[in-house]
Length: 397
Image (cartoon, one colour):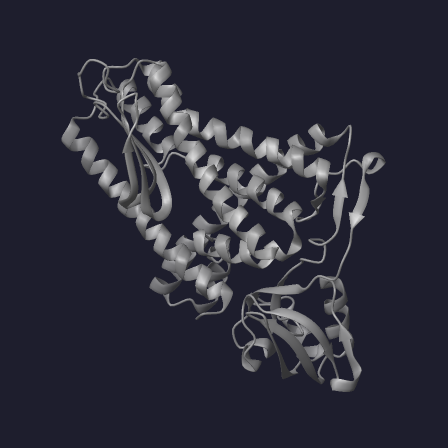
């Protein structure tokens, strides 16, 4: 059953990407702009056919996105029926259609999730207590999201992505860990002791001895630039992922409010990534190890397709409820990122279009291609960074 749910979720992610590009397609056709090709994914085609409408439908080999190729797609083109010949308003509608579809899809999926049961996956998640019903609860693991350098956890070989199962003085006195607060309290009680930690990595259970930091060490570090913990890890509180909350009359309100919260958290996370990147650069230039370490922690929030597939596989065991919820968040995130003024994303192309219209100097075809190439290389570099960080988070590095 878990395999079927994983396949369903993976195909649904592809569907979210396809829907985004389909928004561009429909907006173009309805506004008189001719479509030449509609592709799901990039690269050489594994499936290709010409539709009755005259445009080519294609499925590429690399699952990193998709595209719609329009006739006269450069802003300076003057072909009849082409994108370049269209009015500014038509171009705006075409560029934002994919973003709008993903945003609406995210809200609809959150509405469905609220009706069938959704997790509380982030702090202070919006809820309507009078209409909330707990429908499913089971054991969940506490995952390590980041391991501090030179910490007890680091020295013991624990890695990001490991799930803490139990902890205690010896094998006969292990306490099963089901939530972050419990682990934090337990390590505080056992401060300075050598403890046995049972953890899961890639589905395999392991045990390791860890010498926890003492209470004095933790206390003395609180007012420094690099405070220490007893175990020395940042934890992902997944204890609520197996408890689901169903709503009835308030489901639309819950969906809209969580959309608002998720949007704020997404942009806060992106800002942390920007600060992290700048911090890593300045830290390396000035040889400031503390600044570099803190920046790497911020940048580690950046994740991509590898982590999505990994989490879908891991969480498919949690049933269809969580998959619906995570698909909603993916759809919202795709919309929120695509609207940013980064070329060649939709928001970046719109930003460039409005700027050139504002100064009344449209880019030539050659100049536009150069700008788009630079932007594409930036996005490609970002993809490689996210793949590296995803693999590091999973524990492959």
